[in-house]
Image (cartoon, rainbow, N blue to C red; front, side, top):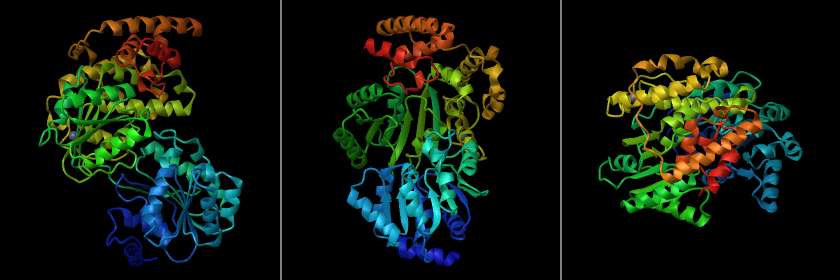
Length: 525
Ligand SMILES: [Zn+2]
């Protein structure tokens, strides 16, 4: 197929006169039957990469493995006008709809089939698919294949084997997020032959990144949110790591005059959809949310993203800040962190030494801490995590040399480094290949400015800290460990302050028996 006819398909079926940057090369490679990995940021038109081949003449089915039913439904809606016969098979479907979809596939009327990975693993499904010609096997959100990615799904591991059983059709893996290790995993797991790799730049020239040590109270957040033109009239998203904090911050910001809305998985569906509608329709609305909010968010005029807690991975962080400035106008992102959070990221959980998934989780959390603590341009370092080389961005706090640059950062970094030494990190530096560059980042601790004092604990926090210390001692005795191996004093103080409410809270990761500590926190409320 020539590029011209690909362009004709684009116009006649999808109504676009031109490809977005990066699309044409990938489509061309796919149409000539090559195996391809395409890594492209959100918003760069990844789904067209497999939708367009489905519209190409010559018969055969494009099979798309997608992890999310909501995304399948969205794409079916968009494809309804394209003339490409598209169907989906998933677990939330009426039997009649499933039967109709199967019929469309078996008869050759369907050109595009969306299916979840667990569906593809079923024998009946494989028998159906073996009876037809598959011209392309596309794997959406391909980073799910890797435990180095932040959304690892075990059922994705089987997809390479499934492709082989289906007669080894050409494979297209697409993702918006894949560092070098994730990319290698995708290539190794999904492909029988070395794939051609296309990677679009992850640079975001309209986005300015800031990091700062978190102070008590909402003042930093308020000031950052009001920084733009027409203070209080700009839309933004504030991410918190716990539901309680989300609710409390939304209330506080409303009291201060913001149009602030809470969003997390603990709210009922009605409240969630009300918040979401308001966010999309009201100018200046601010969403205060856990990371449950965001999939498919495409509001063009989001001007700022604030992470009230250190994100758990650079991949997640990139996706979240990517929701600002979709319209191309200047946007800004602020990440707040505490030395305790940094210190926790350097503490190696015992499991990380045997378990691949735990090791991946540890490497991701640490990469995010490095981004917060390291000197040099933020964006340059962020892009380096995705395997992309770039020059200084000229917009981040370090590039601007602004008030958030050296002194404050140095002290928090020195803390993180000291914590690393204390946790025995230095002796076990072989835990993952990404750490090779750590020592050069370490300023001599002797020269570091003195640690800024944390505000004292409140009476309630101090009481909770004592209860946590007692529990730590009990765990230590039970497991025959030194108490500081169960949890450091810093970690317990962080728990006493933040009171995380769920076992998946980052503050609890890497600690021995997090459930027991969580119970103490809950009982103290
Ligand atoms: Zn920069």
